[in-house]
Image: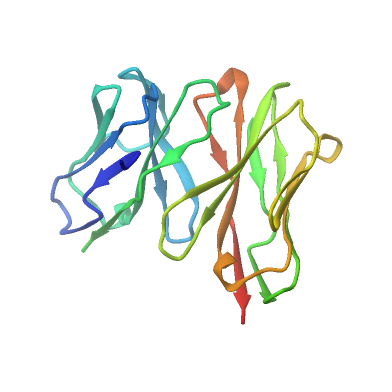
Length: 113
Length: 115
């Protein structure tokens, strides 16, 4: 009965590779997010989708491409991985409007070597 | 613009001490929501509480209490009689009613409770 699940939990890869992280929520929420947490624990929003439509796109390199096939899924594809992409990536979901708290997945630790 | 400041980077206390984590926010909206999240060493982000801008009543939940003061734009979190299991990074966050797609997080406060 996991609410927000993301896979994989760990991802170790070499520079220049392409990788994807998947996220699914079963809470019936209409909005999903990707956050990046760096080594200093700063949490920064990357993207947000509402009912499959992109509504937030922060200044993220275009090597990062989110895809939302339906409102329960938001995947993150990263091309040409760089060392600086190493971080923990969190998927989250909520109901649009700011009132509803974010429900987070358990995170994906990406290590680029 | 939205901004959340948590001035305390790290705090260490001895078990059973009380500890207060500070949070100061900036917002352009009249209706907004404040949140606290806990990130234990295992890494997951756990939602603790939400307050809306119209409700300045303080809240208590067990050993946890929250003090919301609009006059000082603060939403502080107190843990009474701290326990080792309270050791975690705590994040304060803000979302705005009219810009509700974007939750902004503070930089976090790392709390270490020593036995």
